[in-house]
Image (cartoon, rainbow, N blue to C red; front, side, top):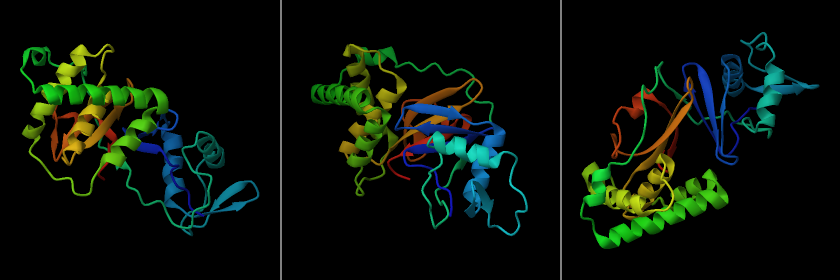
Length: 247
C-alpha cells in the first residue's frame, strides 16, 4: 500500500516544516520537522501492515523513523494522510520552497484612490454581486465552497491575458468593496477577482502563500507570471500552498 494526502488537503514546505491547509475544516496545521519528515517518508515508500505497525517494503529502508507509526496515526486522525489503501504512489508535486525569511511586513489594504476612479456601472454591479456570492459561499460552505466554485467556473478554453486587462475589474471590485457592509479581506477579494476573470475566460489562479514564524497566510490572484494588484515578490517570500484552478 501507498499513503496519499487526503482529499481537500493542500500541503507545502516552509523552512523544513510542512504547513497544511484543510479546506474541508477551514484549518491550517503546522507540522514539526520530525512529523514533516514522517510525511515525506510515508509518501516516498510502499508499506504493509504488520499487526498494528506499518513496515516499509523498500529494501533500502532498514528502520523506520522514530515514532513513525505514532505520527501516521496522528496524521490520519487529523485527516492529513488518507486511511485508504492505495496501489499507486502519490504523484502530486509538493511545493518545497527554498529557505525564506518570509514577508517582512504584509499589511494588505485596498488603494483608496479607486473610490474616486470612474468605473463602468455594469462591471461595478457585477463585482458587487460576485462579492456577495463569495461571502455567501464562505459562510455557508466554508473555504471548500469557494474553491469548488472557482474550479467549476474554470474553462479549458480560458486564454492567457495581459495583466493590464484586469485593471477594469480591479477598479470595479475595489469600489464595490468600499460600499460593501463588511470589511473585505484578501481571500474574499481574490476570490471575487478570479471569478470575475474566469467569467471572461481569463486564465488566472487564486494562490495562497504561507509562512510559519510568525504564522501568516495571504491570498492573491496571478495571471501568467504576474501578481494582480499586489506585491510581485509574494511567490518568492511566501510558500505557495494552494494554486487553483489551473495546475
